[in-house]
Amino acid sequence: MHMISTLVTVLAAMWISTEPTSPAPATDIKVQAVKVAETRSVQLQPDGPKMKYNGQPGQAAQLAVTVELIGAQLAQVVQYGQLKINSAADDQGQPLKAPEESFSTISSGMQEVDRQSMYFWYEEVPTDRIQFDLIFEPTARTAKQIKTIDAAIQLNLVAEKRQIVFENPTGLADQKLTHADLEAAKLNISLGKSEGEEAKNTIKLQINGSRDGLIDAELQDASGKKLETSRMTWSMGDNTEMSLQSWEPLPEGVKLVLTVGIGQQTLNVPIKLENINLP
Image 1 (cartoon, rainbow, N blue to C red):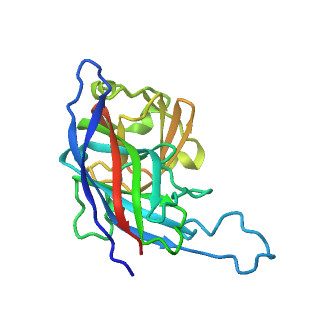
Image 2: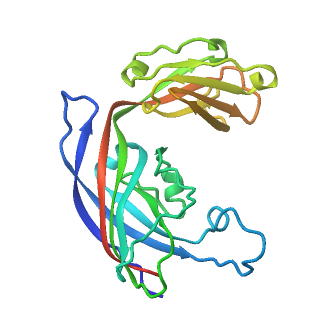
């Protein structure tokens, strides 16, 4: 078993400001490979029933390179995605290929940063870094290293996070939410109407237009304690519906708490890695 190589490169990343009159300065982001994991599978009965996918999600034959970004400004990152792999090759000169079937969401869109999940097995959850996987098909067994990876990922950042508390959200059904911080975050949110049994434990948000400025939404009881909820989100075009469903009937004095981001910016980070040992 080869030892996993941890390669660090410091890359100058260019800021793309959403406000053309206030261009953000260039900054340095450390990019490193922290883990390589490989799984392989083979169909032992080729004449038997054909599988639709090459294994189950999370068990498919694949090569996963965990990449970590490190930098003080990563504490401001709220979303990441639009991952683009320009090229990658092993030390045999063979290109690394993306799987035909991929269950990754960061290649096609943006995903909320969840550091609790990223660093679940760590003693502390850092705020100045994020992790994600680059997924490829397994290399040939003769390969000992990934020679090069050239990729890029997009980060959405906010200059400031603010919380907005709406008292008695059940009484605001079918109404547009108004607040100066919602306007600053460029959010257009109304509360939908829940009916039947759903009305006892569900609050629905209807977002018209971009929801990039919405970092989090939760329900709290009258004392400010967070309620355990499940969240479902549906999007169609520029319209998004988010449903917050409490595990218990909504208590008296329930509050809707929105965390929004002010001063949104986009950062494109190049990823250039070399000589990563394979397992």
